[in-house]
Image 1 (cartoon, one colour):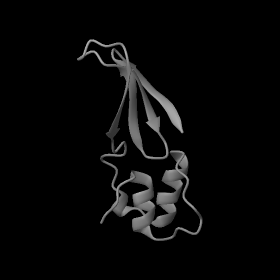
Image 2 (image 1 turned 30 degrees about the horizontal axis):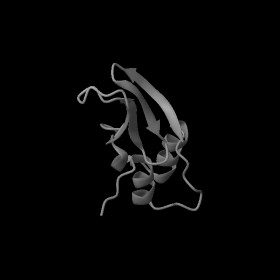
Image 3 (image 1 turned 90 degrees about the vertical axis):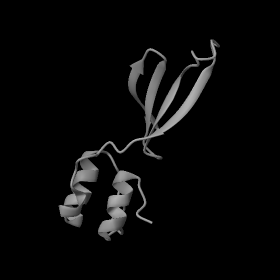
Image 4 (image 1 turned 120 degrees about the vertical axis):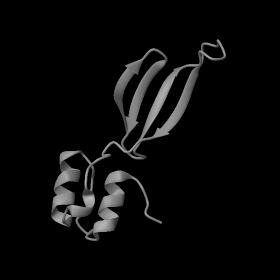
Length: 90
């Protein structure tokens, strides 16, 4: 689901809640054309948060506060952290 993030001079940026990235929908000014351009930018919006020091319950509470769905059956810390950040530790 896309949620409006901010408006810029080149268009509107949306936060894609499923893929955890910013989607920019705007005008391609470099080419001088008035057409819609979609650019995906991966962003870790929780940069600076120390997930390694949190217990699974704390991680799930954090996720709930930020609108991130964590299944009750998911109990492994690393998987919960991956779900929150959208980054795999492979």
